[in-house]
Image (cartoon, rainbow over all chains, first blue to last red):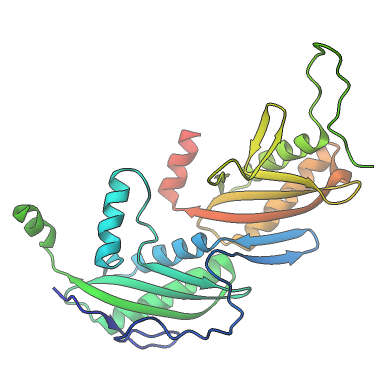
Length: 163
Length: 131
């Protein structure tokens, strides 16, 4: 089971080994607690960060070769919170920074063993950009993909047997 | 002249008719929920956003005066995973139409829409059934 983090470089983002993404800090992005209004004479439209996160998560899950989202800790916490009805796992492994017109996305994924990681990362990037731009109208500047584990078929059974 | 919620009450007078502010909240929310793609109103942690008047509470919509004659409407919505800006326009139009029908068009100011969350199709259906 791959434990180390792998980030792979690609068109609108990267997937290579190292800590946080090197985002442009001065892009006029807002903090994750804020929201991005689009003003018009008849009112404004605001899309909460949670929406962008969820769209990114859904888009990533649609890609063949993605087994799950989130690092080990996030998945463990997600499983527990979901089991006790305190939350859902939909957006685990996703973090976004959203500005007035742009968004950048960091994704942590578990891929299926045997799939090409660069290809999966590229497909994730493409689908996430397509979905976010289509649904929210935001322009996606980066999709950084971290592959932090591989899934082997039968992993779950083994875990069950041991425990 | 700001629409007033103050009514004339003496002793155990009959319930006051709802203010234009409350009516706008009810009409706006009803109109928004009728738009395809809108799943439900969002009521966040705590009591807000909501329009409250007496014992009446309309969750997910906040109606506040923006000038002497008009009220701004803030809708907080949970939707399906659909393009959000066209949806916002449809909601706005529907609210304007409903306000006109209800004789409240003059009182309606800007309609601000916040998409608080999205739900996938299955969840949306379950949510609709539960409602």
